[in-house]
Image (tube, rainbow, N blue to C red; front, side, top):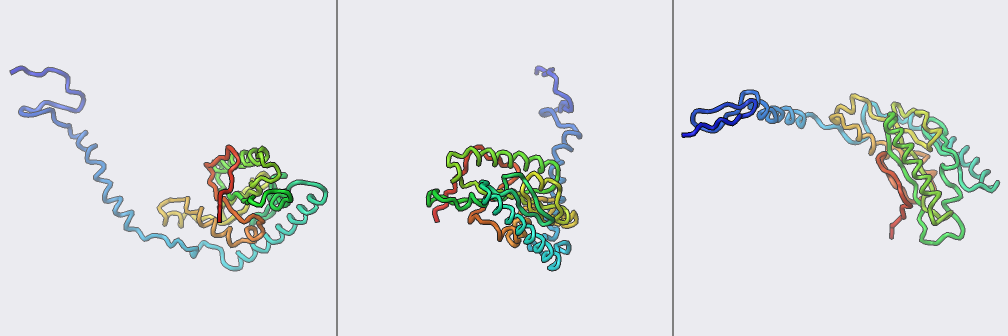
Length: 250
């Protein structure tokens, strides 16, 4: 017969009675995925974390009471400032609360006079945007971008003063629930994030901080002080490009 003399490529050799054979190196690469199966089964066999907020690092009742007291005091001070601005002819309030103290954000905080505005249609349903995040630098810049676009869209809404975009809170899971400094730029509320030991129970899934921070927020005085009846829970990779109508029909 005729011998095929074409190059066989690296890692392949001729067989006396069949097609080219794989080398040991390539065979090892093929078997590599199967080696991960025992590791995957071991990970699945690890005890799953309890999703309820009863970890040893969760704040106790005394700490939560202290946070609530500070938040109520901050809300009261912010409310007095907002009322003074409204009486002076201002359009919106400029302060919101955090668990560690007041937070700013210029004139784009909780819009006291914008929630109930005379002359707006009865179908108007103002909503509060809650942006969940952590305190790392990457998400801090994402929050800046999101808040910038929220302000731009709100201010350019054809509905004008009847816009449904009336409030914004950056909900931050931070170490110990401490402020990170960005509250001077963006209205923020801080909740304790999971410790590294707790995160390991969720196999490194840090996003588990998101539902936990929302749970804390719904129990806070900050939430109780909101005037909007609707919340839009957003993520840091969201960006508003145009007014978002509230389509609820209930």
